[in-house]
Image 1: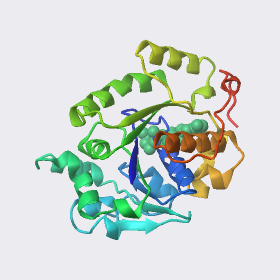
Image 2: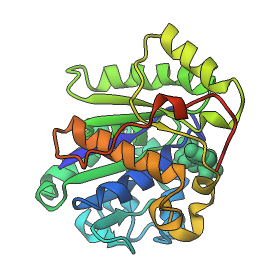
Image 3: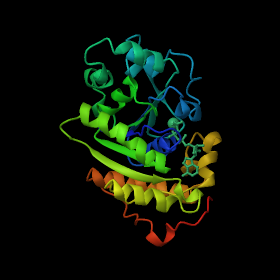
Length: 271
Ligand SMILES: Nc1ncnc2c1ncn2[C@@H]1O[C@H](COP(=O)(O)OP(=O)(O)OP(=O)(O)O)[C@@H](O)[C@H]1O
Ligand SMILES: [Mg+2]
């Protein structure tokens, strides 16, 4: 089971949108478990899998030992996609667990002791936007991090996440994809972000998730652009991200060609 955490210490940069759609895309070719680790529970709401408040049947209940992780896995409307819901109490739990030694690896320990790996090809984690003990748990088991950049602020916030990453994973046994996200919504923004990334020597992923108005309206369709608007550029970009991720893990890809650079102009276009 490959673990992919979508993360940055910046709100609204596209983490949940990417986690949801990456999971849906990967589920077209394998068994995927999507884990909502954000107390705001955005993905949980898309999947109508909880109210964000009730702890029973959620990750919160598993992390506090009231239920096993296996017991809180739910099926979804999407084939091959299973899900663990979040609850807003995760934030409080984060504050409490710091008293225990090894609290950062609580999730990793559950994954290992319950032997979930053989049941899934991928685990996709949506993480909170704040540096926190819960974020640490999202970092600990990851093989690959996907870090969306939707503003110059997101490039700056990356430093706080990266510092935490270096502390928690000193062996460096992971990959990182820095993904431009929703930058074509404003003229000049993409160029400013690219220049800042270059200045900080941050390599960017081949895939870019362009601004796509349909991506911002996926709520009624369980969060999946593939179901809602399969031919929108948001769906094409997400499909390309799936291919790039599979390629990183040396898994067969369907030959989806990278988005031509010409299509990634700095023009404002959101649909
Ligand atoms: N490529 C895109 N094109 C247009 N809108 C987008 C795109 N990506 C994300 N959005 C919109 O931007 C907003 C923030 O996205 P999202 O919720 O995925 O970010 P987030 O990083 O998970 O936020 P938070 O830190 O609050 O959890 C949402 O309204 C979403 O619909
Ligand atoms: Mg989110």
